[in-house]
Image (cartoon, rainbow, N blue to C red):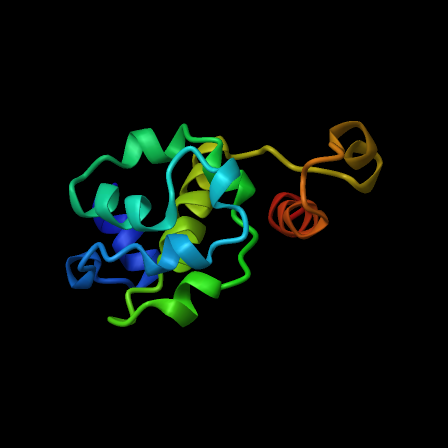
Length: 123
């Protein structure tokens, strides 16, 4: 699975120097179980199952603030997105319809996350 995540993301996690600038710029870091720099480290160390079961992948806003701040161009958001896609592919036929969305809404969930989930799960 680690090779799949690396292939989907196109990210080399070994470039990460774990400075934490990505996490410091993340607007959703306080809601995430694992922070952006931890995602990269966990991929590097093969802890993919933990990531795939993490609620943090749902709270990432895909704003790419972490990508902008990374001094080594590691692109943590792409790693998080790759893990999301791996989860979706593993679920197979889990599709959303527009009628199902209102029941899933949460006042604390960013609208961008809802829109991203809809785009991914409706196909």
